[in-house]
Amino acid sequence: MKLSVNLPTKTYELLIEKGALDHVGSWVRKLWQPQKIVIITDETVNDLYGKKVKNAIQDEGFNVSVVTIKPGETSKNLEEAQKLYRYLAEKEMTRKDGIVILGGGVVGDLGGFVASTYMRGLHFLQIPTTLLAQVDSSIGGKTAVNTSVAKNLVGTFAQPDGVLIDPNTLLTLEKRRVREGLAEVVKSAAIADTELWALLDTLKDEDDALSFSEEIIYACCQIKGQVVEEDEKDTGIRLILNYGHTIGHAIEQTCGYGVVTHGEAVAIGMSQITKNAEKIGTMPKGIYQQLVSMLQKFHLPTHLDDWEAESLYKALIHDKKTQGNNIRIILLEGLGKAKIETIQIEDMKQYLKK
Ligand code: NAD
Image 1 (spheres, rainbow, N blue to C red):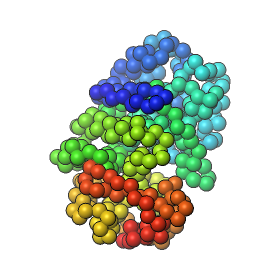
Image 2 (image 1 turned 45 degrees about the vertical axis):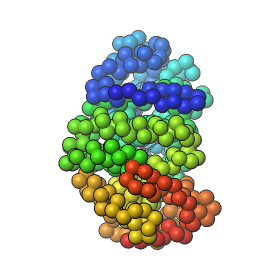
Image 3 (image 1 turned 30 degrees about the horizontal axis):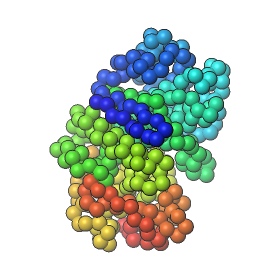
Image 4 (image 1 turned 30 degrees about the vertical axis):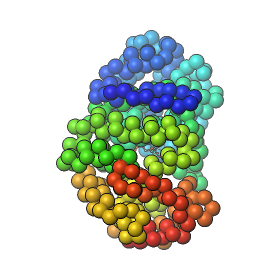
């Protein structure tokens, strides 16, 4: 399956296919002429897929080397970026050369940031290997690193030359990671796609979802691609992708990153805002129950036992979606249709009630 993302400055293609990694060499060859390539990946993904990707690209006549980072969010920082800049300089990479980013969202965000800033920007390709990266982070061109002040504080908008998605890579992914990717899938269906919702409705659990991974990933990429085409720089409609994320980010921040994963926090965030929106009357009744049943069958949490509304509110005040005394929140007009509402930050308290 193929999809293209058409932006004013660039058009690129997403290839979504089980087994696509078997053709990674010819895929790169179609996009780029032989030159130097650095593959940026993490140690875990390198052990699983590094050699295969390196050899396949090398066989097409490219001069390929691999650089790895330690897996996990703690690597997404400026120190790691510095190390990668040094590595690229040692390899004498120039703007004629290219970077292949292989891995989850951490490698994607950090690698994209480095690629887009080294020498003011090298060409790069994304090969996402987690469900979260395949349905979300590898599409849309947001790159970032965390700083001691905030997560994703420093970053760029930079689009890849292409994205290769092989859903078979999900077979080696930990169950908890598959589930958190499914939280973003449920979000995508809830905000924009009743057909995807209907497909998800027919599934038993996360294993069942993996048998439909191609269709599910395609649907999510289509939604994200369309939203990004309309609003590449995130000043308007792109905000709908944040359904459940405002409260979700506050949960991640107060519980500690990694204690509750991003996807789990989003699942709780969507449930929480929907439950209270139905009570307040800003969302039609009946969605909460459908949402909770959907999340629960994928073994995602829908509430926190220790709900600290006050700490969550404090964390929320610093959200990027705040504007003065106001905050923009994402609600649903119905399943499959999101709306953006601006409310006073103070009014967020009603959405944080346990
Ligand atoms: P991740 O990159 O840390 O990957 C999770 C773990 O899975 C890592 O330990 C990794 O080594 C391992 N892994 C990756 N692929 C694997 C595979 N196929 N088999 C086995 N193990 C595998 O985390 P993530 O959840 O993919 O991404 C989270 C990051 O994405 C966060 O930093 C978040 O901010 C970012 N993000 C960015 C955007 C964006 O638009 N740029 C959107 C959403 C999230």
